[in-house]
Length: 147
Image (cartoon, rainbow, N blue to C red; front, side):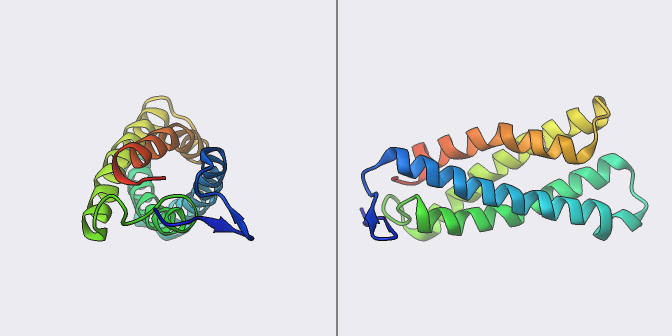
């Protein structure tokens, strides 16, 4: 396992510090995702004339995929020991498999909140992210990385 050091402090064996850093990484990735979602839904995709469901699902998928890459790289730097359990190619494949499942949860929840319950898309996106973060952390920790 590679040593994890931040500002001269070695936190390699501190699960608490890693959880705090994961929440920081997840929080910044969530802000990145929400910002992208807002831009996609209000500016880039809005003029296409799509219905609210198609617009919401497309913006959700695009923002989720880009923030997943952001999260992967930042998480490997600060939290997880990338390449220690699996070779990088397999690791990245597993990250995308877990992420696809997370995207499925995202799309299902967004459909329920926006289409069936008629909630505002941005509020729905924030709530959905808060729910899916639990899946993301547990699946990465248990199946992909050594933390």
